[in-house]
Length: 590
Image: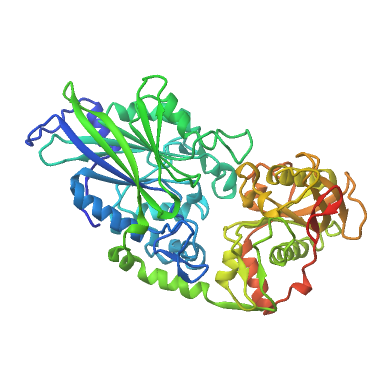
């Protein structure tokens, strides 16, 4: 670790303190004010170096922001030098184990659970010297064994108060940590850090967590643990891997996905909260607690290490105990700092291995295939996904009682930047198209349910356009902030989406490949990813439909193997338009 380890009070010591043991006396002089700084990151998603594995080049984005823990390390060094190491706490707000080919490689290609090697993210966090971290929903993507290995690797506690063991009912992760800070010239101060994570993992990673861990309501969990920590700490910080506003991408069967502001408003005793999960850039937000009337500071750093939140806490003595007098938060843009050589060195070998892996050529494309327009017109590159999913499910159904049912396939435009160049196609090209680590499943739906599904997808994604006048397809997608990955496209049938009609009444033509109308009582097998089948995105019917295929095969790997086996990706063999945007029956695009 880069810095000397700070004293951490374990839960056992806390229990002893609660039993009446006197605190250790301090010989340090006591003053009536103290300044502490909390540095926070969130949603790193496997990013260590400022590198785009999908482009095999340094990362760039329009805003100029950078990415990665290597740049974060330089920010932390600078603030420690400015404030003094003893005055600075460094925390992470979750979603660190999934998101790049680097973390995929060491979870699936050469799993650290089998090799015994240190996880590259653990090596990076330890090179910086973090004090605490909360689990995010994506920590469960690769199973509990990998998460446990990571937890044992890192030098800091990994928290999750609302995650419980399904068998014992006890916390599965450490609920909180107490960090005892000894700032020269001041009486020691104890900072209590509680970790909470969004409960959607119960749906999104059902296959990995069902029967093993359960996810409790974040607000209720905060009500349980904040008073416990507040009684034992001078400062209470909540790491909340959830956004604000109460939005959810699953149904009503689970507690709210993004209740961070509700926690701040209704649970007294919190001094500061780090917010995440929603990938927003919100350096400072103040919520007034309804019980205490006190301000609670919320800060959300930018995802991928684009910024580090700096929270400056002013403490003063009140009746012999430290109390937070004020808290302010600012964003430090990591683009203004170089990559930390210590972090780079700690992960250099793993980075080189990941780069070599993604640059393997798997096939040749007969022409360039782009996903740029996939959200508003049928494209060959998404048809490639549909073809592989359809063939895989059809093959698995051979010899079963569903072998004669039509197989449909669902895919979403995950990345607008995805492209297969004419010529060599590499693993990174395919990974750039299919950016999530989903597995393939299939369910049985009726014709009426298929229509409902399409209505839900089109209804919330497209803006309703006027009955006349020009229409720019670039401007009518993503209605009300709906992300591209929650717009599902169906193959195996043909259909029209009339974007001049209101939501719920937009699928004006739905026919089978031979042109016959899809009847309500017809039966179909529909290939979907595990996220969608588990209820992610809150689409109708699919989460409760009979599952007819689930061999736990990763869709990205299926795409790679399909391309490797054939050696050629020729859209003439699998691509044909099957859906169109229309207005009053007239197609808006050719």
